[in-house]
Amino acid sequence: MRFGQLIVLSCGAAMLPLLAGCKKEVVRAEPPPPKVTVAHPEERELIDYDQYNGWLEAAQTVEVRARVRGHIQKVDFTDGQLVKEGDLLFELDPRPFEADVGRERDQRAIYEAQLVVAQKEEARFKELLGRGGASQTQVDEAEAKTKSLEAELKANEQEIARKSLDLEYARITAPISGRVSRAMLTVGNLVNAGGSDPLLTTIVSVDPIYVYFPIDERALQRYQVQRIREGQTTRPSSLKQSQIPIKFGLETDTGFPHEGVMDFVDNQIDQTTGTITARAVAHDPNGRLLPGSRVRIRVPTSGQHTVTLLPDTALLSDQDKRYVLVLDDKNVVQRRDVMPGKLLDDGNRVILAGASGTALSTNDRVVVEGLQTARINYPVEPITPTTQPTQTASLDH
Image (cartoon, rainbow, N blue to C red; front, side, top):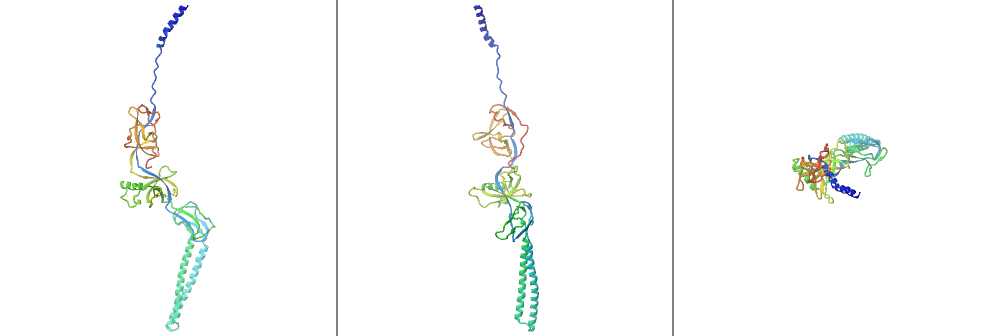
């Protein structure tokens, strides 16, 4: 029995290598290339600009005050409405002024009657003087009385004009066209004229409107030189002749929908900031722009030129260098150093050509999504986006 068991065990041990040789060899499959989204650089016609922050001011601001003393009888406007020059704003009680004018006119009638008597008396004395019935003294006195009454009549006419002017001032009208503020005093209040006269309301003009913003002196000179290069103007003698255009927008505006022209700079530089205050004038026929509003301003610094754009998210950083990942004809990832320019409102970045960067063409395929999975010198599977981003921003928008 032992001998038989040994034979079986020996045969089993001998068959182990044969069984091991019958197993299949496992081959490890290579993973597929990662998928990345690629896009071609875009070319667009743009204008370079400088951007500033500024504010709006009315071209004209008037404080409306009474010129005469009286009680307010009527307020003839709605708070905040647009008014035209000459529109009635306030009415004071006219009766005291009408009474003054009437009294002066009655006094004029008295002077006129007295003058008629004096003139007749003067003529009679002159006639009697030739026949010896009157003395020269009587003639001189008659002449003096006539001239005195004539002077009184002229003074009375001037007083009537002054009283009539007070009556006119009882109707307080708009001195300029624009938007009126609220009524500071209402019906029934007493208005005093003089140094302590109260403010009734204010009016600000709406068209045109001024745009103020601080710039440095070199920038101003650069704008003027640019206008000369573009042939838009000859060498100007003033900023107004340069006709430097600007675009601006309110904080709530999309982009820069409003336009204006620079027409003034201050006469000295602020030593604390190194800037000088510039002003542009803009038309606002609808009165939408309110004085005091904060605005964003763009001033063009170049003519229209072609630039290359890429989504800003496609740019990577390596210390002080910026680069993008591009695909060659075999879909292998390559590094391309670039020189970035300005960032646009739509998220695109201007790519410049310079010594520290290589220009891109519209034929290049740049990785814009999937940058984490793309490795330099390794292949990828490119995917072209089905939709292109909407062009909503530009340097001159």
